[in-house]
Length: 352
Image 1 (cartoon, rainbow, N blue to C red):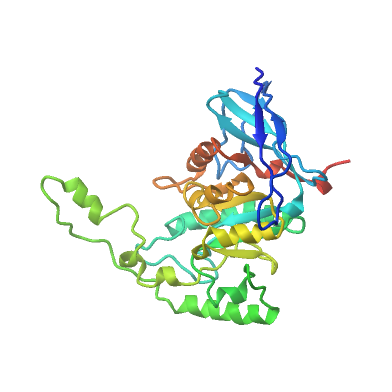
Image 2 (tube, helix red, strand yellow; image 1 turned 30 degrees about the horizontal axis):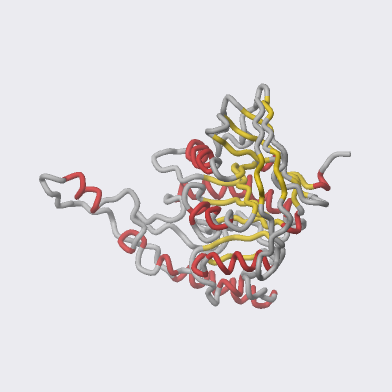
């Protein structure tokens, strides 16, 4: 099958205060059928159920930078094309940021813990948080280490504002702390987290129900997810959340604070000449799409590629995230480019 169309892609000059139009590029949207396509995102079956679709097509590169040194094969799904479309992409690494959404340090050695007996945070139970930490260590952290010295930035988004404690621990848009400041900040952060009681109330034992609408009243009083003061305790969400200890944080890595909003992130990236974003982190169906550093924001201003197996979807009512991650990425692929860890290759890694 061949599909010919012309897409006029408006380009801009990175780093300019006002985006000036470049010469428009004409993209030849040629689709070539791929025979016997292999399942996608199949390298980590413990965390991700592979993507399988009958029809796959190849297409020309979307991103094709001069002097590219970072090669990212990607795909998307199109109902109109009746299948998955795969294409190469050739990026300049120094114009690429690698962003990890919400690597929360929950239930790890920092001391920020799921409140007992019923408090919820991140993936909402200690066991699920443990699995997410394992995924971070096995899948995401090695990718960050591999790209760190080549990409423009490795970045992490965290809830809350750029508070005085965490800005001593992590580099932010406005400040790079000294080694001495980091020591002081880490001590204050651990003390602050250790001082909290992490204790909430037990489950309600009695629920008054309207005889005509008992189901409504039941869920109103006993929802599937209540992360408020009743079960987490007052002040839990005001604590300064660190980056997970499953991540090897470098002093030059940058933390994004959600409460600052998207414009400061956008402006920081553009000021530093970033045009491309490789997006990783948690949770695929929620934070990865809708928070400050989510793809709904970033894809308005940057060439975003989601690294599918470096994400996890929320997996309520399941012991595994495999199917939730598959469903979330499948839906995102309607309007986003998707890649996987093994499809990201630096020029220096190519075999002669």
